[in-house]
Length: 411
Image (cartoon, rainbow, N blue to C red):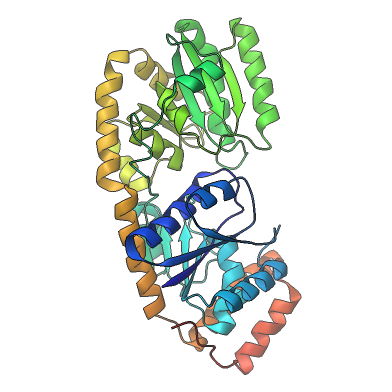
């Protein structure tokens, strides 16, 4: 099966890693032929390392994007894929209106965010990354659903896979330092609250536990804000307790160097694969260590959470204090964490599930009347928000009165 993988802008991020690693694994384990279609960025390097063929897509600020739909149609004409696998709702809309609605190219959508997007057409096969989101999607009336957990390459992300000593040396972390790390995009959406709270926690814990230091690995528009907060914290402590390193295409040495990790989503899963004690942060004050007592909660809800909205940073400070003040617990907690990833999130098991979902999406093609009705419903939501291009509105009106012939896809 030939699969055109329509991914995000290839910035350094967990979802981009998921899309690339799963595409390569589909090829290696199941013989599929993946082609990556995305807006270029630093993660093209990873795609190249994985041996994926890459087709650049134009960037877009709103969706559906006429420019991206044109580029996608051209790619589909050249490649004749059996399936388009779109990652998240922006790519879904471009693919739905660009090649699925009028050309009947089978479409599978994967959502790795922590919401059920209203804009994704209901009849499109859609995967979510947690059982809780899957239940919410069913409650919202969606039926063509699948669970696709965020995959972790447990061979590349493993104790001993890389050496963290060079990272420590490069950024001035001593062997005796207790190193707390976060690997994250430095953006306001989802991420910034937890990053700020962790820096503020360092202002307290850095006095109680002098060897404690914190490395923020990543880049993005919120970097300047975090640098200012880190500088204030360092001045108050009288030492460089908080360090921002910038982004790394391969962050594995960071996890290897860490004693404790703070994060959410795919970053926290990779930390667990490295057998590192991990504190999961979310929004509205949420913070909870990953332990045998909390593992089932995170398995259902995902590595994220919503707190009660209290601005008091005490929960995160307490969780971090409990972990970093007991170094003797690092190893047993890390072993449990690694075993959890091996049982539920390995790249091999997630790829098996994706292979099945791809085959079901191709076999279960929707008839034109269903696609049009689905497109009209989605367009109604978009029109209410004023984001549907005029040309697309005219196309939908035409389809409702006289649909075009079905265009066969590659056999």
